[in-house]
Amino acid sequence: MSGRSRVLYIEDSALAIRVVEEILGKRPTVDLIPAMTAADGIAKARSEQPRLIILDLGLPDRSGVEVLNELRADESTSQIPVLVLTADTDPEQEARLLVSGALAYLTKPMDENLFLALVDECLSSG
Image (cartoon, rainbow, N blue to C red; front, top):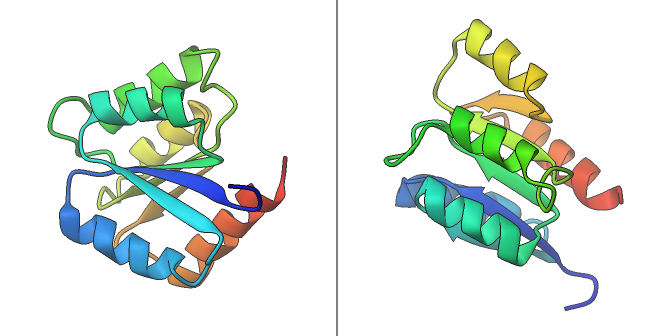
């Protein structure tokens, strides 16, 4: 698995997961790990130790805000960068999440070039 980077995407929409898979296909060394619930996402973050977590806010079992807070509070996941990718364009929500430790806040439909630049930045550091 050397030279490969695991990216966890916590998102309940299969379509959104496919879109991100397609975009990350431009980065052949990236393995995308999908999680369709908050509980599954948190468990996979702990077990897989991905280089990056992409997080949707509208999850069926818990809010993405709660997920981010739990990831930040857990010693095993606190240092993993979290990129929020959501349809929520509320600037107050964005500010709260950035203060809570999100690396960036992107809205759907996303700017693909900005998304890939952020992914590249995360995977090249550390």
